[in-house]
Length: 162
Image 1 (tube, helix red, strand yellow):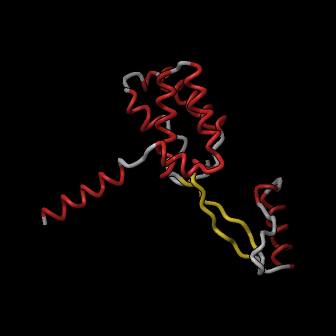
Image 2 (tube, one colour):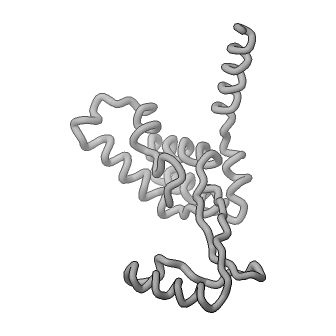
Image 3 (cartoon, helix red, strand yellow):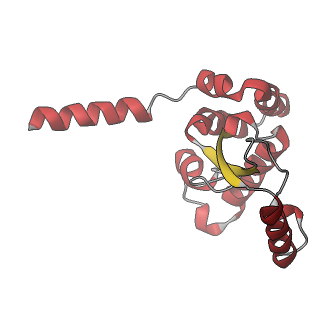
């Protein structure tokens, strides 16, 4: 029994500590320039803690994903319906009903790695805002850099839209 517990702890440690910048850049694919711009921005400004914050965020991107879906027809083609493109919920529902009545549609789920689509502006704005929050609030005065990275800096917690 003890061997099983130690083996599980070993596996857990291996899985959690395996994130690297290389992993993030591999998942970034066509978005590598955005991640590079973030690191270059903080190198250029000389803000060491913000640079380290950027490294922390980017290294952890491979474990964060966004989930979405598209509506497809019977030929598996995207029908172009996006409920958030409408000014209000009622208009979106009416449009969907018309679409549903004219063609057979079904949702096709998609998953994206954060590294593959987050813009450099979004990441930089998030770091700057988190840093400002950390440094300018009395409730966070006692937090060290590691606590900041784990609890204030992240731009998301699970799979909510980024």
